[in-house]
Length: 84
Image (cartoon, rainbow, N blue to C red; front, side, top):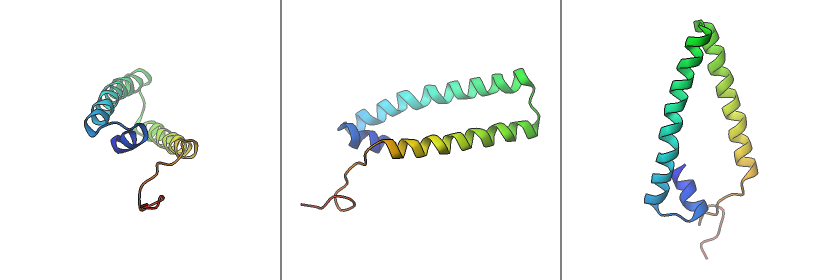
């Protein structure tokens, strides 16, 4: 993801890595805390946890597909852009 941000917005490697780190670390923290709260609050069984996980993975797959379809492709020399 850092490489995509670097190419899409013309940032340096360091800048894109810092931006991605500033986004990913808090998102992971909030996901763990909110997931623990939901499990504790609703007292989910093992099967119910599996259903929640499968639902989240399916939604993630759908939204990832939308992200790929909406954004225009990044041009890479030799792959989808000629060298000259």
